[in-house]
Image (tube, rainbow, N blue to C red; front, side, top):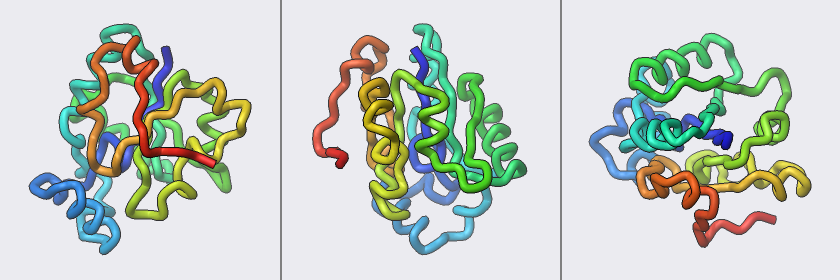
Length: 171
């Protein structure tokens, strides 16, 4: 099973978000709090490292999708992932005018986990709502609240594959 996980807002957050709740974290991004652009100091959201490691130990291949478009910022993402003990996995990112949906369709994960992009415009900024109907039939989408983490998702891969979260309906 291949799981594509969006990084920023889903499993990583800016360092000054640590002592705050989800709503304040979103506000910090909207207001461009200083650490939002300090990509090298990003930290895990909740127990995302443990959750991804648990799935990896059950045989899942974890791959990541970065919001960054510059190689040097993606390298910072990779460094943050290594430093925090995330499972090894490729980090994909947009190049040129490439869209997240194009990347997801080229990877064709079994499961795509991303946040709702509340701070930057919601659905229009997300990956899954913008992939083709054909790809949607093959990729399971799991959407979490931005900066809410993935701790609440099932530990068991079989349960994750059938997990349903109400409230997110895509066009």
